[in-house]
View 1: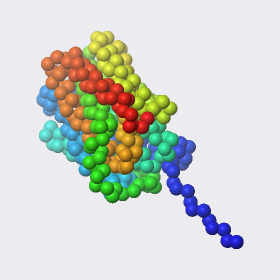
View 2: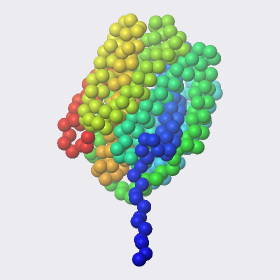
View 3: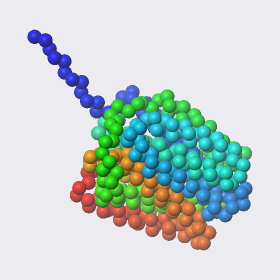
View 4: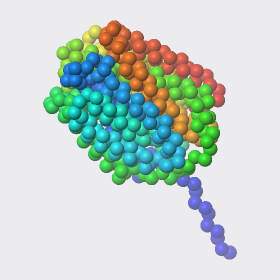
Length: 402
């Protein structure tokens, strides 16, 4: 009797230890590193840009805010587009285009051109953050979702740190052009790694339901997560936008001030750890604790001794990346549980994330001008209290998965 071969089992996703998981991890780490190094490359240069271009602290912050605003607006297109065009192609082209624009930023002839290029660069970057979490949700085995998301966010944390450290160090050696040129070289290198290593999608299915976009804008749990993104990121960027000016008051130049951003390593570790804890104890338990840690870090920065200020930044960074690392993956899980639209939901989360960065990060310059560090800490603390309330509401939601 002829034996009928069994149908192959459905692809269930990469697991830690698989060759594909390693390629995926390295590629997304490189993509996150490049994207966030380029995005925040001017943050460590704000006092330098203010001096060279003769603009105020609040105006210098536009070099960060316009990039994050361009990114946030483009996410509204990139996320839905990925549901039709696919994930990997969009991510590869996004990192490559942002790296090319980074080269032109280093060559900008004046302040207006630099701001325009930064806004355009933000638009080009949108393809990675709009797609990465949804891609992980589709390509990684379900028992490792939170861990994989945490590792990706850890890569973005290292990217943010690298951009600030490299830019600050190079600015001391050769000014702001050398700083942005070094970041551009990093971006080009990482774009090549992404093009070579990122595995093609295996579980991607093109969206067929136009109702998905409406649903991810009506789900109360998703709306709360979008609020978490806006307020937490707004507080985080507000603090770091003003940090350069505060450290300059201690006599630190861009290079030494940039070393402070090494505390991002704490954020990288906390994001990965929070992902593992969320897999074990649930997301609802981890996010509120992360909010409290972030708030405690802001409170510590009100001290005057420089070592205590740096400690406060480290505590705040650890808490923020724990919140963001878990919440960003939570959005994809919630959207998938409701019937799809993970790309749209991830895009709206990140739109809120960068809208909060642009608005509240920009207000930090005004807060610093009028009330120095207590004004900045008050702004960040108020935003984080809102984050905590939203996290507690999510904890009480009976419909939400762990």
